[in-house]
Length: 218
Image (cartoon, rainbow, N blue to C red; front, side, top):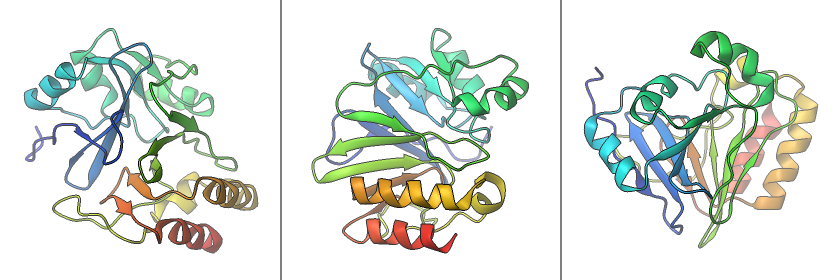
């Protein structure tokens, strides 16, 4: 068992449908499903009883998303706690995930309550799906490996995101295609909150510029 407990799910500021939890530098997300219960995004493995109890109190887990070929380690443990949950993943990641999970996830993604959607970046060789939600002050993103935050003992928001070093070598396929897509998406959404799978959240007026700077350097 991990030495640190998994933090129970907590509401993301400015929304009543999006939740986050951490263990150390690792992060998972959850959103309310349109059909009831929660959709887990990049679940962290070995959830302790308190974390599972909080998820049950929030309506249980109806779906689990493995958002990339590398973010699947918590799927089995959460599925053991919520065996009726459907498991989904990006279509381009299904073959890899079938080998790693022992079953083939569905390419059909769940639908969400409120203004929560999924976005799939272009130009990646290791498919990712990102979570996008409207909050009181703008748009929040949750991502796997494209961006990161500084590692801290709590989730105090940083002002500027970081590049996760493995992204360029392990995930990026067509840099020009990805850059064009990412810059257009950043300009469209102008995110004010970022919830990376690795590190502290990032928030504030400098976030969109910081994201653009990272993409431009790839």
